[in-house]
Length: 482
Image 1 (cartoon, rainbow, N blue to C red):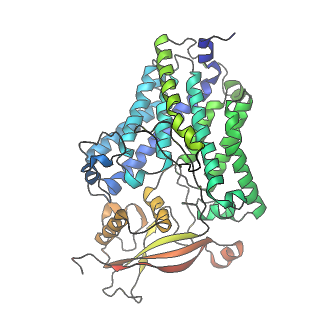
Image 2 (image 1 turned 90 degrees about the vertical axis):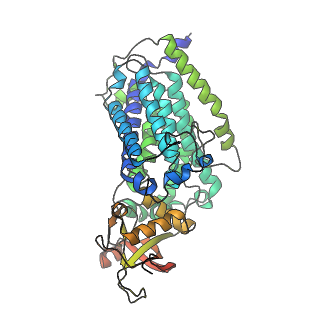
């Protein structure tokens, strides 16, 4: 009969712990780097949505933050540098050498620091992978160090996180759009996804029967496989492998920030050392980790497990709800959340294009030039770049504009920065057509984009074929100029 202590100690999951701790730390590093490079322009003291204005109405804060009483760009940079240093130490495995409380402190610090950023990040930090990283960081904090065996309850909680992530996404698709039910969703997805990658066009041009298989494969991976994460070995490892392979396909064909990469990392919680060694013989079977768990550490892990199990009531209820929420948090600490993605698929790709001119007369005869973004489609000849897991927040929000309204505070502020030729803002772009000179006017137009067929690509050299739809915003100028 297996004792509680024997069950608690997952001796055969040291490889999983190493991947989880170092992988989540690597994603934290990228998240803080992205924040250091973009936050001040988007949300800083002179940002598009200044945090200082949010702090004037503290009731609008999403949860705890170090910036609750004061924000400054220098304090933000300090938070980011501290986060990157802590993350780098965990990537190198330094805290894991010490007692089990040391990596716990490091990952809880990463969780609190990044939560401070997310909770003042407003619409620029309103993505599901932000709360996913926070929940993953908190849970991984209790995997312990090399001095103790990996704790089974935490590995199961991480498998439960992957279950909610995948199964929730699968349910939201079936409930949200007939295209997922009639197997046509992938006819459109590669072309209309927020930020295509260099291979997205090739994926889009695959035969339709392949796209239907993609949808079937997605339903299998998200609606069936997650249950197998709790089966005996080697079935658990095989389930993890299916999830990892499907996520790698998404990595290859798109740019979803760190959503796919963090899912891959978390799936390793179900991979045992014997299975990993059988697939990759250079992975050792004996890591030399501690064989005994101190009572105080067992108590901490069980207390955290109880907390997360209790908090699981709300996401479980959400899974069975007819009005299932997608990417929702049920507490201020963003733990045990509900996840999901692409509950509906857009059928057409509409891009917002911003143009400027130096001419005094903003008529059609003026010399209008386009601003180019780093990630989102613009020049029809340009091949999309691979950006993930790095997150281009401005480009992502530009994709959402046609789905709602361009009349948003941050977008108006962005147009003003272009008219001012603000250097920090222009560095967020791929190309400033005026090389630092102030335009006299800017205007906003919408275009329908579609991938060029192979024949069109050979004839024109264009990867995209675009058609102008309408003028979204008439020419505008700064008041002191007008």
